[in-house]
Image (cartoon, rainbow, N blue to C red):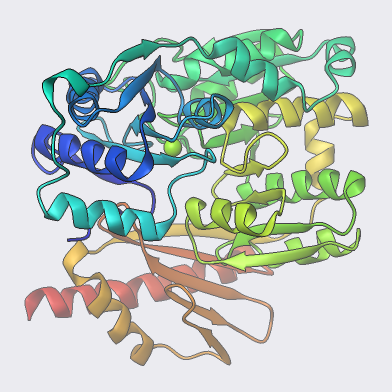
Amino acid sequence: MKLFGSNGVRGVANEEFTLELASSLAASAGNLMGKEIGVGRDGRTTSPMFRDAIVSALLSIGCNVHDFGLVTTPGLQFMVREKGLNGGVMITASHNPPQFNGVKMIYHDGVEVPKPLEAEIEALVAKGGPPRCEWNEVGSVYHHDYIDTYTDSVISHVDIEAIKKAGLSVALDLGNGAAVFTAPVVASKLGCKLYTINSEIDGSFPGRGSEPTPDNLVDLKELIKATGSDLGIGYDGDGDRSIIIDENSNAVWGDKSLSLVAQEFMKTHPGETLVTAISSSPSIEKVVAKYGGKVHWTKVGSVLVSRAMVENGYRIGGEENGGIMYGPHLEVRDGSMVLALMLHYIATRKRPLSELIAEQPNLFKDKDKTPCPNHLKEEVLERLVTKVDAPEISTMDGVKLVYGDGSWILFRPSGTEPIFRLYAESVSEERVRELIDSHKAIVKEVVDELSAA
Ligand code: MG
């Protein structure tokens, strides 16, 4: 039984993602990972309920629980590695709508568990979970604070004095999520003047929903204008993903922020390898090649990028959706680390963010999505391959069509939602739109055909 999507297990709380499932998943993961397990939760309405089920399940098999309370996913990931725990269970549905919840399983190295271990956890859940322990062998619960340990590590990777001296202002849209506890602390420790919105935990995500996008951060853009801030960042519900807005209130697309991070990292670490997924712009290869660096391409999914970094010892990675993995801190997406890095670049290069971004390759890219029921995804993909044509077709992940003029389009089923995602890049905005519209129509047609059958 497949429970894990591209990042953890998610579903509508008490319907698809039940207490029984959460309990069985936690007991199985604890059984396979070891005795000392970290637990954290995001600010969702149902997260305390799932926390209690998960803690009980872990205790019942003899695990000791290290409870970090309300925490971002990267915060828990860091603490699992920092404290030398055997693993962690993060209760979150990331950027999904408020009715969802789920878990992300963390391995002892701080990164989400490897795919083979996911499969072992699923198999154990299918068998009814591990045996419970004797009454006198149940585990204990320990509560830990994490904010200072975690934020001190984040800022240890940047030039604290230079940032303080630059006297920067930062505007943050915390999205009513777990980043409330970390990102403002990072900004304050770096001596920034701080402005925040949606800065109270609220599981109904009343501000702008739990998923930040370049288009929905309208209030953040206004806040930057009103305060003259040097940088704005919007966070998702569990604080791993972040969308950057420059001092002119323009959204910085993920490919460009990744390109900036890659450029600055390679300057001081020439010849290293950057890891990213095939949905990212190929222009990143030119950026790193300038410093003798290479790109290691993976299938789409932050866990696959993180795991490729750990397995090969690569220290920098990212995704086109705003995820940056800064290995010297931890090989996972971390929105607070992104905040510190952007402040570091602005302060040490002594130039506004918009100018640093303007140095990056200019490209037109867009993405879109179209509904597709989960059970039809594979069949849709098979039929799609027969309906499209291009000089170069890659099926490493979904279907990627590459044309002679450097344009490309990728369509692939989402691992977390009942949709197909489309990504396209080209030399002009019009050509990108045309690529997306025409292929979206093909996907829709195939979905309709198969739904009717
Ligand atoms: Mg997330």
